[in-house]
Length: 380
Image (cartoon, rainbow, N blue to C red; front, side):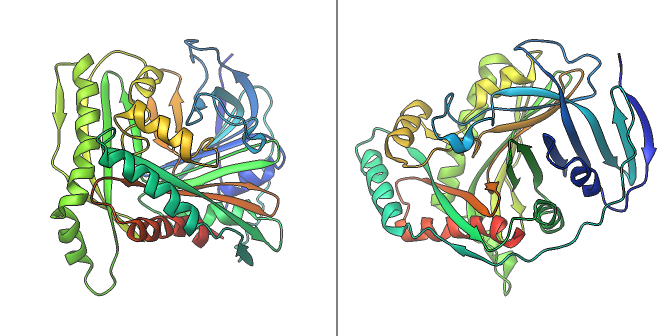
């Protein structure tokens, strides 16, 4: 049985998300083709290697590490799911997909809500301890780079209005991928600039995204040039670029590395380089090959992951993990779940991190993580 579809007109696509309140849901916005997909109500869970034929869209996610212990991450990750209903918005047109029975989607009002909140995390001392341990390992030559992270607990005075948060993420982060997954009373969401891997037929595309500088209202163009010419940031970027390119070269003799450019976001600039190859392997296989890149874990990756697991006191869950949307042919895109948060009722666990290399400074890196944290803070 195939999906049936029809055009609908909602004042705001988030009405679709709100209409299926308490149902399992996913949202995925791709800025590359300006396509928004929202799915609701689990229809099918796929076994590894199972065909997606006749399922218009499937959502897939993996936890950063293969297993999780923290119960707040229960029910999140390591599944590939098709939903019974989808809303797809592209080129100003809204298409409603339904697998069996159609439903009438009400035009619900999406109200912007300004949350009153307080940060319950004072973790600079903990960050310093983590940073010091990692820098020591780098100084011994055991590892070149480790991406360390923070878990920041935020408590709101009221229940978090997820539709308002999503609206803010979409409105304020136009060059980012917006994602949200609701299950078992919890929502994991964010606005990530980072593509892990994209597949279009046999074209494989990935991006090295590493190297960061804050935006400057007075002279933003100068900030871009500073980033492009900064030796510490270029070194950090090159580690990521080389790793992705070398993985691709193992499976393809057609690998192209584009010129390094600047990706400009609301609060930050990043160094970004596209890497392309051709290969017939499935997208999920490429996710396995590339995750985590040195932009998310470190280099060498296995040693960096050992240090993260040993020294970080929180569990990453879906933070910095692969999150993707595919079509029935298996083509699609996986992004990294950064600039993200896990929300339950009035509590927000926000996640932020940074890559540590030989010339990294503890306070500078902490301030950078605060700048990255602004994506979630501003959405509240």
